[in-house]
Image 1 (cartoon, one colour):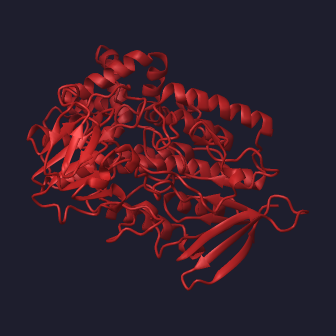
Image 2: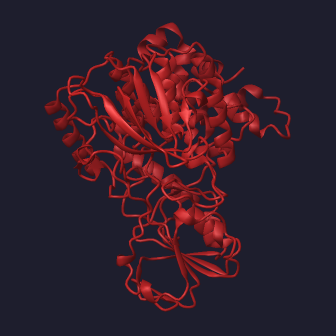
Image 3: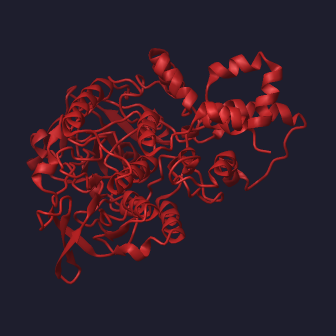
Length: 548
């Protein structure tokens, strides 16, 4: 019987895994190689080898309500898109609220994970660790949760850039970037727009003479600020929107791309990609279009070669006197402590059932948590994976046969490659809400919408029409939280609260104003059009949805 669980890493995935273990009555022991929690979100003045790194200006792409843990709403006063220091503050509050810190061994690195020493006891694991003083220890656990992320091993493909060895300036990977110090009045080429490339190009452009942003395939660019100034990921991300995308996929793509091109023409700005908006995560940037239109950032095609201090692009254009080249070329994922047998691949991805469990284990007692991408925050994905994994450990939920898991993995991989633009650097992409719902079904916590509409129509409308926040997965079933309903009904209040630093009196026609806000919040123009023709229904929905 599983009781003692090793959790490797104390970032977002590790913290929620510790809590999920405690919720199921398990005994977690977390090993964190650094001196603090936070993982990626702990800023370091100097990059630390083997650990994720962020730069000082990083702002969270997802808004706070979309990245929140399912039973821990963020404080209302926190900004919607938090600075990395505020994300770490939220994680500290979470760890303190659920007494997670006492289960973490800091400055302890896991060096190896292997099958247990006693063949008679199936499913156990030997975990070897090394402390800060170099002392090595061996532990035996009933289960292991791997929560180390995949932004620790920079991908620096110098072989793809002929002549790099002749470059007279300085070059480095974005993993090394902390701030623009030392780049004042420099000519800088940033290679790669996805992920951090666009963000770092903007950051450097404030002090550099000129920044050239080289992109091989382009990217869709999305601002954090949506219609009416609302966080963009709180709009158009409801279950109703998901249903429309499922039944009208081409229309959904055209509509989304038109909205982005209405902000700025991606073709005109040299950024239009070959792929559709939902095929790959967009670049989230509030400032990139402004830096391009002001000439501080100039978009260029892929680099052909480098010669001395000159960078030559595939269109034949040349930039001379380049001082710095920054490689925003992604990361290679690596789990050096795991046995090779557990790191086999299906396509670019690890061969994991539901992106969590290796299918070949005699007993499912090892889970990978947080190694997944979707069009939304990682937090709800990792949390749902952890909740499912711990119930599998406990024997409360079973897995299919190895044969059936393998077949589903291959089928899932094929569908992923059809739907998304994948690579070694971006090996996994899931449909956000369907993936969450598929795991929620296995845990027994998926919201029952028909039942909700009968019992609590006001809540049901928020769950169906409002943003799909993680609180929905605490309304019922194992791990049910009494505060989930209130968290959903008050989520817009927490969104609005940070703006109330200078309050403007509302106009007299308050109902009209509330109705407009409610319709914007729904994120779906089609339903808005229908409702606007039905004034009586609008009044009812306004009463049910808008915070009182």
